[in-house]
Image (cartoon, rainbow, N blue to C red; front, side, top):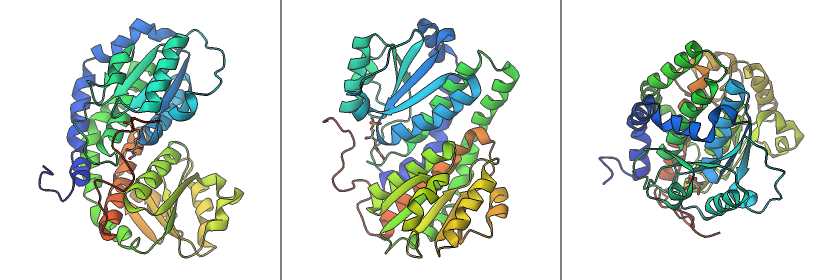
Length: 360
Ligand code: F6R
């Protein structure tokens, strides 16, 4: 039942405010995160994230949060590589965090088994509570997003970000003042309303998607944590619309990808962090100077400073920097959804893909 929406993907995108609310309630009670004390959380020195696809992108955002808030070193690995990679020496205080919607992804499970053999404690962040990953991990943190039917992950990706935001705050308690972490936790409480407001900007996204009907290639750019959002936007677009989409850290543009830019290729730019905005704007001027069409995804304030480079804008409500990655995810999801619709494709079941990748 798509609950009055045309597709499960749309239903799941619109469920996100309720999902976040649910997670906030679940993690307000500290007992879930206090499980980390069984690993001696005060001694966590390095975190190795392991995941695939969208879950990998969510982990890539969390790396920025954890490193900036608690100074714990984080690495992020694609599971299909990590399971075979020569691993450096494991240090005391080193843990792995596996992120998965299904909890059945073959490569992530293989990485889990390997890590357990090596004796590294494994925390799993999983949506399917009865899954193999949830069962085998030392500690499981639930996503509580409810069943996700659309093959392209939307609400589970959002749930991963929110759960890892709570986790980041928990780890930050070791060094940040409770006043600061308390204020950041309040931002998470405001998030459902901000996501709701971002959903109200759907008409601007529909307009941008209508321009993708005959497009064969698109670029996504971001900096800092928004680099991972750019990667997620590109993945979502290629999955649902079969448009070739690639993401780059905006500063990498002139090291090669700029050669691709012409007036036939839309460029989507995530204007997320205030500090990096002038840098991003100058990267984007390189695009417009070559006839490229730039669509900026950002709040009104960032739009003002990008007005000279943007030929299209998908405005999101202004949010505290900590939770901006979640807000930015909304137009990216809607863009992939509407691009698939205008191209007449099977939104919920893209060709060649399975919801749960249980083979290597
Ligand atoms: C993208 C998508 C996939 C999954 C990936 C990992 O929309 O759905 O990239 O994110 O296959 O799956 P899980 O999270 O179930 O391990």
